Image (cartoon, rainbow, N blue to C red):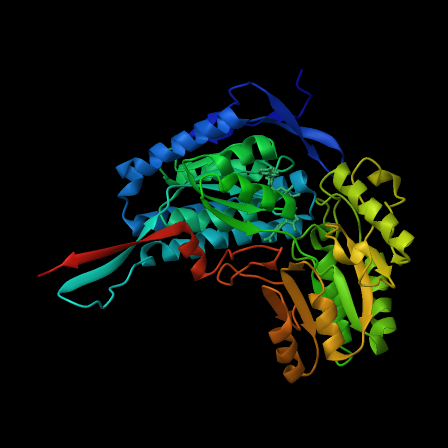
Length: 486
Ligand code: NAD
């Protein structure tokens, strides 16, 4: 029997709402209360195959295949506009499903709208070139869409991570099968509806809900899927690469991070401390690009730490829907348990808890998955908490002496997604930027990104870039044509 207030949702296949062929469903939980509020189809491999079939038919249909690229752009623009018109509704749903404060969810939804708007403008600018060759010949290239693309999405930014890869794929003329993370499927299902309302032909946008290996794995290994893009953990990225290798299909990996926030003694410490706090406690630290490792120059450590501890202790934990909440719960009990276990590991390794270190005492928050903003001081490079992605509200603090030591410690990681540099000396800033093994670097700047700026990691953080003009090139293939004019 369905509990009161629990809404049943459907997948989206071939332009129609669809249950799983198996009839199975699972419950989606509000992490602030621990209560189920929605039922979603528990899709499996058969559902994934049905979605790929529908996307393949849509790709071959002239209604999409021969559509004027500028019309594709107009459809993307319509989606962007509809997202904006329903920003409040989308944001509330994201907050209820993921737990993040409503203000942060609104920022995410606005960013999703921007992704569609940005790539709408590129839809009719994807072009080949003519190439000078010997003889009486015309040689040119065509940039063609790939076909069916699979989009495997994480739970930390459920709508915006889907939008950032779906928009360029659609702009380039591909068809899409998207799979949301099991915890957070709802805003992506609504996005599929908006795509239909905007006028995308049936089957161009499909969404299948269900488990990672059952649905995502099936998509990655399906012979009709030409590209799989996944934003998720390193383990998932490796598995998807392995599955896709059976067809040698393309894989875009946007994976984890253990990102250093480097604060030199000559920095504006007030601004730096505020940015470090935002960089680790936004979204309850559940961010691939969280500045989770503070590297601070020895002489200013106490002052920076004092500011951080005051800031962390002042944060207001609560239901993200409440206006005074500055940090929401973690997405699930399993995620909170993971964070708690890392804090135990860190203290056993010799780190000191300078702030937080456990769930809040407030009984009103007892049924949600809350964990206090936590700062671990005295963290050495070889500790697990300095090396492994915790993916929660835990900042580690490590000191350095001078530029070389800062760069060595920053680069001493298997990840390389994001790094922050804080200094009043621009020469030093550029020197450090050039030496960092990191796909994104921010100088005297909070973690910030735009649809027009590339987002991608080095080392185990990924193998590609999303966003920016170059992102479209991942979603096309090049055909060379030689014409003998003799
Ligand atoms: P996850 O790897 O557990 O899941 C990501 C997606 O992959 C989900 O949809 C999941 O269902 C699916 N999946 C899991 N196993 C699969 C399999 N065997 N085959 C196919 N699909 C599978 O990650 P998560 O817990 O949802 O998200 C957190 C991770 O994502 C963190 O590591 C974080 O750093 C990373 N992330 C990276 C970026 C980036 O842009 N680099 C952005 C956000 C999150």
